[in-house]
Length: 232
Image (cartoon, rainbow, N blue to C red; front, side, top):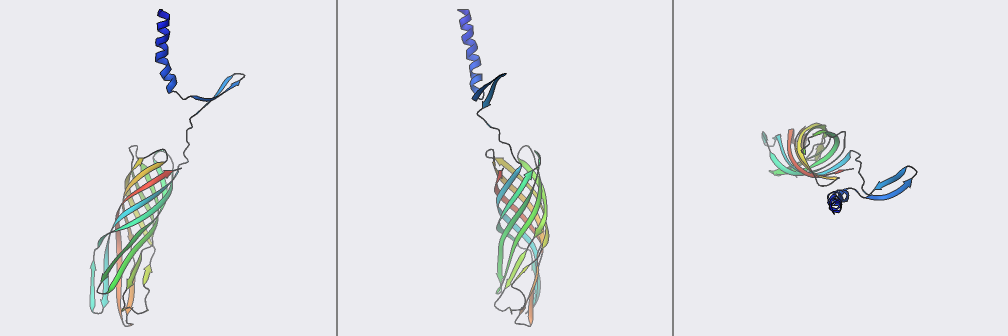
């Protein structure tokens, strides 16, 4: 009777452990024993990933203008909020380091004063490097080029001088953020970025004799973004 009780107790302790273990999918008898195939698979990561982000950009720049009708000159420092979007494709090199190429578009800011309309939009391309901490936080930096485009429009402008002006400018960025993993492949990506670049200098004639000149200096961009990252 004691032996029977001991066997029952042993089965009670051991059976849950066997139940929790991966169950064999197939057994194949060989000359030396059995080959066992289990039902689970361990997904190997390639290290490549893609990110799509929506941005809220706060732009600040020194806008200088001058005109001889009437003779005037001045500047102002706008702080404007506009929306943007960017896409990045990158690769993780080990657990902590990754690099990506980012292409983005900061949508158009426009303002109209005394019949003259001014607008600014900012496409860009950057190469970024990141360091990921084990708690989901990350920091990074990037270098690239921007293509600032301004437009000056007024019914009084003559045909001389282009309505829009695009220049190529260096651009840099400093980033910090947080990644939250949803499952094996998808992550929510929250990012803050401070970026800087330079704008355009544009001049147009009024009725063929007078002029208006506008210069956009150093552009600061403080942006907050939310995105989805997919790991391949």
